[in-house]
Length: 71
Image 1 (tube, rainbow, N blue to C red):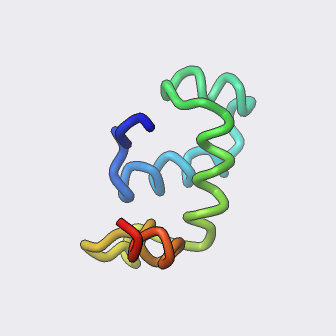
Image 2 (image 1 turned 90 degrees about the vertical axis):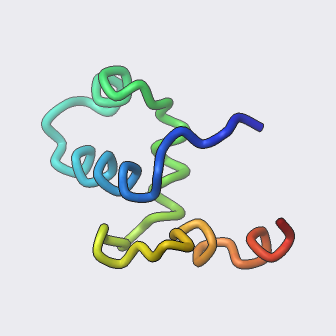
């Protein structure tokens, strides 16, 4: 599995920019260097989370507590 190069904050910023709809999804992903599949996955994990709500433990731990406990 590839290491994650994006922090929770950067993912949320990317999602907020994508929601503005100024570009097509494929053009947006191409300019940001993000796969469309990754963007869709992030939407499932970070849905409704703002930058203010991200704790040091991260949104990933809250979204998938079983995976966080497993390692």
